[in-house]
Amino acid sequence: MLTRLIAFALLVVSTVLIATADSAAVAVTGAWARATPPGLDVSAAYFVIENRGAADRLTAVSSPVAGRAELHRTTTRDGMARMEHQHAVAVPPGRTEFAPGGLHVMLLGLEQPLRAGDRFPLTLEFERAGELTVEVSVRAAGGAGHGHGNGHGHSDGHGHGG
Image (cartoon, rainbow, N blue to C red; front, side, top):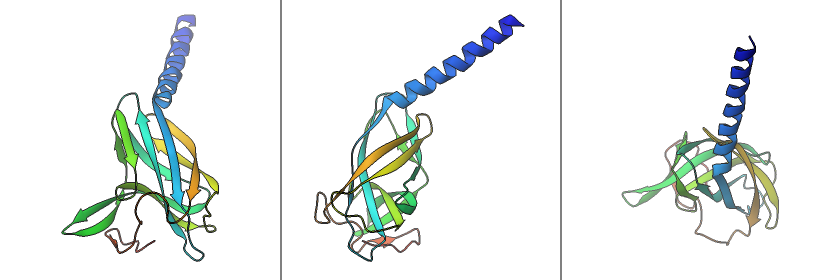
């Protein structure tokens, strides 16, 4: 009985250590979102994921500032830019960038406009690394990167722009 108890305790401890090692292997830096004008209830968040461990997947995102947050990828087909909802995003070892014109987090149903200088939490859920909450800085609408959503088609039927 004591041997089984010790074996069980070692299993639990090793599982916790593996989970801790996985979460320590993933870091998120440079998180930012574009400010929104009054009346617009959507924005996008961008960041860089550094994965120093085994391949992982980003499976969900959430934030208290939005009714819903979704993983999206902007693609261009036949000269037309489209946003496509992603159910998960592969995070191989190395750097995965969420940037205007590529991968991004859509923030839908904003509770209030995002103003330059604001900060808000964004929680990312990874398959292996678990949950990681980062602070997102809001930049002026004309800030880094090119415009998001202007003239983009939306293949997932959301019809959000801006």
